[in-house]
Amino acid sequence: MVDRRRPTGRLVIGGVADTEVDGEIVQIVTDSAATVSAVFEEKVRHVLAANGITGVSDTAWYTVPPVAWTLERIGEAAGRTVLRRIGGRVVTDDRSLSVPPEPGRAFVALAEFVSEDVHRGPAADRVAACRARRREPGRWRLAAVDGYQYPPAFAEGVFRATAATAAGVAPERVAVEAVTPAADERHAVALSW
Figure (tube, rainbow, N blue to C red):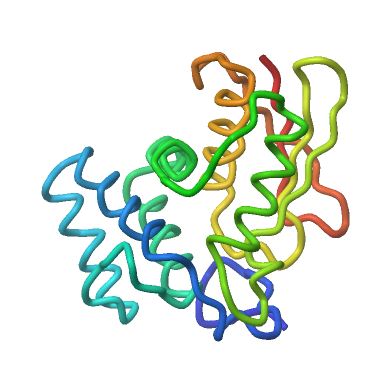
């Protein structure tokens, strides 16, 4: 079933309305908006409020759809680059994520982190599900699989920051190229460094 209320055509999976995201992630989103400008931070808080999130606490839990819709509005208002930067900050700023210094292990840790630590509820294992495949040294293909609820640019930022942290390089050194997603993927990218 496709959610017709929002223009994204995001696949609505069973249980997503009852699945929550950790408040630390939402706090990182608002903190990232503040680095753009105070006006932009206020706009992000207004969008959150319009989606039912009137206050942000890093110890609270928030349902996934309003957070995902807010990220989409951020992308529309500020562009993909800002949304990628926010996704990257989730990796670098979240205190509970430990990225191993080897890309393969790092991507496994990321997948476990988003399904076990960042989300809870009936669709916790699907709302941010991703997979990685090594193509050759320093080249990986990452995909957000069906059920993934967040915007592609946000996922790209998360993937890029994970690769950069694991490889010990600056995020700017990680090239991100969109690739054709497989039938069971929402979007996919190739990363190289």
